[in-house]
Image (cartoon, rainbow, N blue to C red; front, top):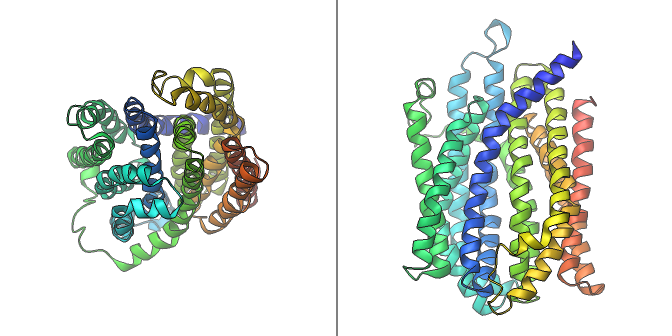
Length: 454
């Protein structure tokens, strides 16, 4: 009986993660599309775009993490409905309250970060960035910041759909966003003459349209409409809010640590000049695109593990986690080979070789893509293992492990290699790889400890 159960779990994980992965890839396509458009303006515009988006995502991390907390809370509520004797009675009400609490928690977090967003140039100058690039990056951030609340609300509702094992609506909305983003961004950047600011505004506009479309689809669905997710959303309840904060604050901390270390790396690349920042933009966005697949598998793992744990079936929870980790590892091993073989061709997609400084940026970007290929496997394992742990509502210890791996090992190692060992930008990326690998080992060990080995 064991083998059919494992095979069934593989298919169930693939069925759930497929639409989530496509949703993530669609959202990543928005970022990559804008980078390619900014690359046509030159290395300064591309560098400013990556500096602005790095600060944007670092400050988005707390709200994003709190929105992600909706998924494990909702999954365990739905799993509890399977318990015998009416133990899980009221699960629909608890899912509704958990969704509202996640919306409130992320909104309050975002409001706290907006003053820093508005003064992005001062923040970037304090981090040692070129003043001219900092001003350009501020243009991007001031446009994009107004999309933060709608993006986090979209994430919370997407978590609800994952817990219900019906993520297709978010996928179709994301596909539509990709189709709209290119003409909106192109119009604002070029004919409207807004340049980097136009790219930021396009992010905010598309995020708002995505939320509106997803809400409409949820309201039109006969099953989803019964949950009344947004009914009396202005009246948060303290108990669900407390649960979301208990689960979500460590997730937010982990997101801040992970996004923060890559943002810090972007700032460190800015110390080496615009060409290095542009090369980093190419490499990080390519690596981020491959990362969207294991991230989707991780989100499916949160739902699958949460459903099993909520129903009290710890064997099924263990099986769901290990299956997801294996799937993520297999995909990222294949992506490692792709990056190692096709790095120069990938780098050439982002910049016009005829622009000043583009040649140097493309050569460095190809080298960084090779380094990125070397830590693909670790990146896939760590994110899926973290997603499985979230399904068990185990978030505090993983946050501490992320702090150790990224900030205790990764960033110090990268800065030491870049400056003390004289390796420059390549040293920064080797440090990122070392930190990611350490986090993968620690998260895998943590999952094995709390769930048991397969």
